[in-house]
Amino acid sequence: MPELRSKIPKRIGVTLSYESVWEVVFSFYQVEHHGYLRMAIALDDGISRAPDSVKTSVFKNLSGINVEKASDIKTGSLRALVISVGESEFDSLCDFSSKNEAYAVDHVFRAFVREVYRRGLPIGSFGRAVPLVVKSIQGIARAGPMVTVGNNPKLQAGIEAAGAQAITTRPTEVIIDHANKLVTSGGQLASNRLVEVAADCENMFEAIIELSKG
Image 1 (cartoon, rainbow, N blue to C red):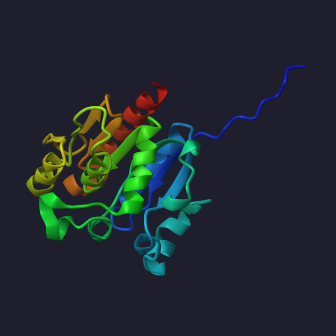
Image 2: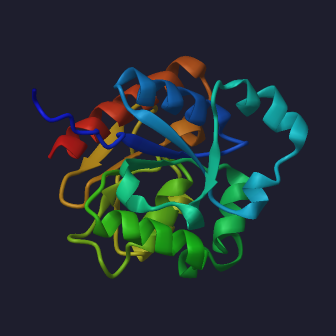
Image 3: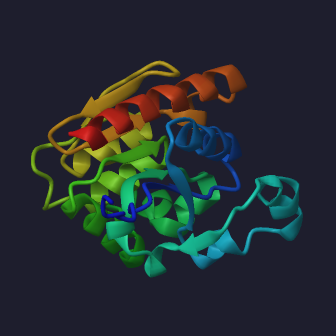
């Protein structure tokens, strides 16, 4: 009789954004569509303390959702990470609004992203999450990152100051950086049309799954 071996669950982590909710919902769909298990991640206490009315109306209606803090996650259990943040969440994770191109990123977030990156796992990020990722891997990137936030000159300037190349794209377009295993797009920052956000997430995950096989 052949020996039975337990399989390690394949999880893709998706950060919870209560402001870019469609990115999260469509990302959860794509995770399950591709046969992976989802891991819902709260990036900081500010996000996890979102109003109960918001949680109840959206995320508690997603069956089986179990939220874990980034600081508690063992990155070895992940196959990839997808990051979504809204405007106030972005402001809670960095000081870009006051420091502009000289911005710094929250140390807990930075450490989490750097650990995922060092493991060689694909990292996807939408819109405002992109400068957070670029800044977090500054100094350890395998090559100068190539990313996009869609078409946002202010964020593009911050990204380039952090040593990355910012490419202008249209809604639903993604940039794949094979050297750094990064997939980026404008997300809801580029378009709030549901059909475009859904297509954006589909393109994002097709690239992430391909990178994860490599």
